[in-house]
Length: 179
Ligand code: AMP
Image 1: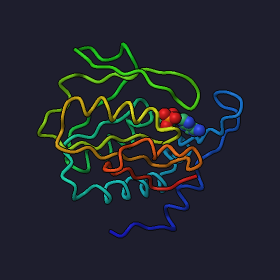
Image 2: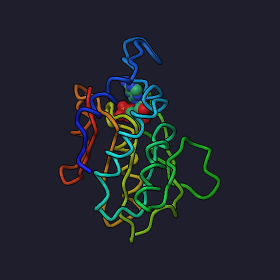
Image 3: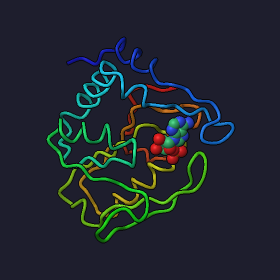
Image 4: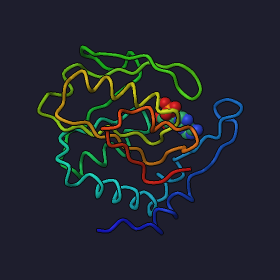
């Protein structure tokens, strides 16, 4: 399958912009309007899977909560396992955690310490790249477990925030479309 640019443009067009949410000044890109649209969801799922089909991904790490949606689709379709990266206090076994700065506030994320092994090729997925703070923290947590390789993907990115520059140059970071 060749990625259908027109269909991706249509999927992008159903993302709802909510001004001043959750705080004044933020233009919140609400992907629930994309996820509830069967055609847009199919387009995004197909494009994500196509992009990573031949990379030998063994684990997909999804970032709570919106990263669980695309992350679960990717894991199932790629024949990989799924690992949740969660807000503090949610994971029951031994975890490692990291504090980071978001576009609007400070947060902590956690992962089970045995979730990834050195044999894994990992794809970390989230719905949206803003400042990149969340994903950088996720990348650093996953890196502690020394997988063979780490890929990073988002459904969409906010280009003006320059989040992509936060990552080391040798890490492949992709978005399906940008705002
Ligand atoms: P960041 O760490 O700044 O890249 O923030 C990314 C995380 O916060 C992602 O999980 C997004 O879902 C959410 N997020 C941050 N800014 C926005 C925004 N303007 N619109 C929608 N989601 C956002």
